[in-house]
Image (cartoon, rainbow, N blue to C red; front, side):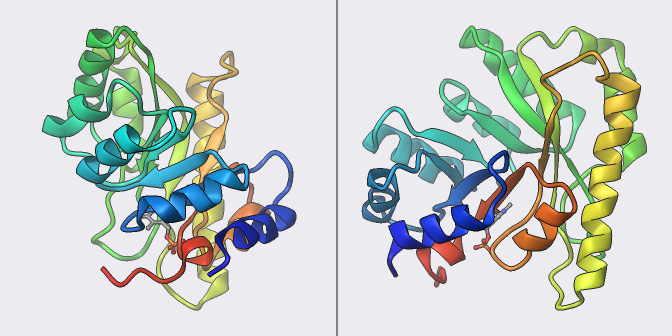
Length: 222
Ligand SMILES: *Cc1c(COP(=O)(O)O)cnc(C)c1O
């Protein structure tokens, strides 16, 4: 695997305004440093323990994104430094992120995760569940979280039409929430969708953040 080269090739196909999160989960620090030394500074992890360890060991100007399912009792470990939490899918989790943000005197950027895939196993909100959170009095008091957009994962299938349809659905959710709740906010601007096998489709459907792992670092065998 030529990691630096893979990143370069992917970046050449991405529109300039689309951010690339290099998903380094299960990969060693040496792989991350290969990417880092080629100039890439944005990485994503899906396990709190791995993320905190890598944060401690690697250069401090790395922008760390948490992309997995986040347990409430582990928010405290990443609250001091995490750049963006992609997978917020409950009021309970958002409340804890706010509390931990306050303890660290920072505002933690978060994306609301939506369920767009056919598979039942994937986490995420429905549009109505998101409205319930955003309409609540309590949410308006959460000064230490900032919702900056939406995130979703498409069904794992070869059927490109279905994947495109699901990405379109997420983009529609983004536009709906933007109109209903965030029309005055510059901060609400991100749609995180697209992985190694489907990022080209995601970009076509309006992704602003792609999360790519195996196409950069090689297959994971863990
Ligand atoms: C692992 C993972 C990715 C990257 O997957 P690849 O197929 O290796 O690109 C993206 N998003 C999430 C949420 C992940 O867990």
